[in-house]
Image 1 (cartoon, helix red, strand yellow):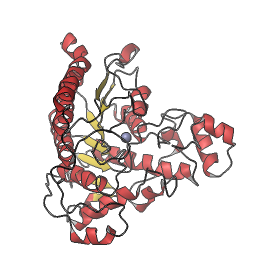
Image 2: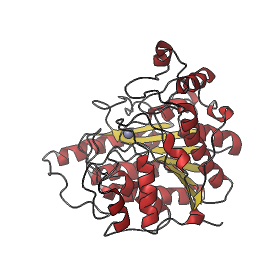
Image 3: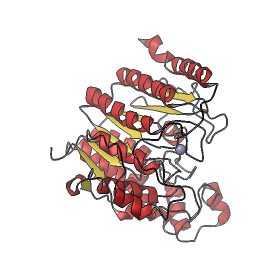
Amino acid sequence: MKNDSVFVYSPDLLGYKFSETHPFNQLRVQLAYELLRDSGCLNDDQIIKPRQATDEEIILIHDPGYVEAVKQAGQGQLNREIALNYGLGTEDTPIFPNMHEASSWIVGATLTAVDHVMEGKSKHALSLSGGLHHGFRGKASGFCIYNDSSIAIEYMKRKYNARVLYVDTDAHHGDGVQWAFYDDPDVCTLSIHETGRYLFPGTGSIHEKGAGKGYGFSFNVPVDAFTEDESFLECYEKSLWEVAEFFKPDVIITQNGVDAHYYDPLTHLSVTMKTYTEIPRIAKKVAEKYCGGRWIATGGGGYDIWRVVPRAWSYLWCVMNDQAPSGQIAENWLKRWTNEAKHPLPPTWEDESGIYKPIPRKDEITSKNRATLEKSLYSIKKSS
Ligand SMILES: [Zn+2]
């Protein structure tokens, strides 16, 4: 094995862009890439180039009619009313030129990561442009057009006959992936997210357990708003070990959205960089114990593209590679981006202490999350 981990990247992945003002901004993938390069944490021989996904691959999950609509929309040829029926041209998911091609690159990047790991060329692979977990079979939703994770899972099932565990730590529920495999006992989904009471997409309750033969293979741990590092990590670590022990996957694919951070403008959780060093560390251990190390990681949400995403995704790559950057952020990187950044760039890898005021409800939130976790895992306890 040449490298333990590979990083899938090319500028082709940056074309997924709704508008200048849309919160989903793939510049963050470039920012993370450059931060890693400037920090000496990513070498030429660890980078592999993505390919575009084919239509046959995309329709492993998506309806052909929807794919056709995305193609037409990207050429300016889709009637507005039909577009809206497909979730295209909404405020969340506007139409942009060549949106099919841009989305196919992202799907292809995640499939490139999958093939590398499943063919044994590396143990781990990272596809930061992917993780578009809200995409449905026949509908765009929540900034997501094609669901690269769902396509990758179906692809792994068919090509490699694999049992796949999908783990989603984005602040939003991983609804698209959950519903795509809701009745499938060979795919297990675990999502830890902010409760859907006040947050998009509103689903992801502990009662969504799967259907038919897939009953008991869908797990959700919805945590309370203002959840901090310790409680978020407790929910994540316990649920991941228990679910992995129950399901015994052949491979793990993680969605590493980083929008649970306190600074994120779209959500209400209060985790810090500490969570984003621990999440990959535990995923890697679990993959080592159950899957011969096989672990594919994607990006996902993350809307503070200056203070949060570059550091959090760089940590993800570094932890994959047993590196632990700390202290000062690379001077070159800070210099290059300081003028463009909407916020003062953080000078260190770690968050400074006290980025938010302590709240009196912390203990109450922790106990509530513990009770939720307990109930989420109840079906495992009952069956064992
Ligand atoms: Zn999100």
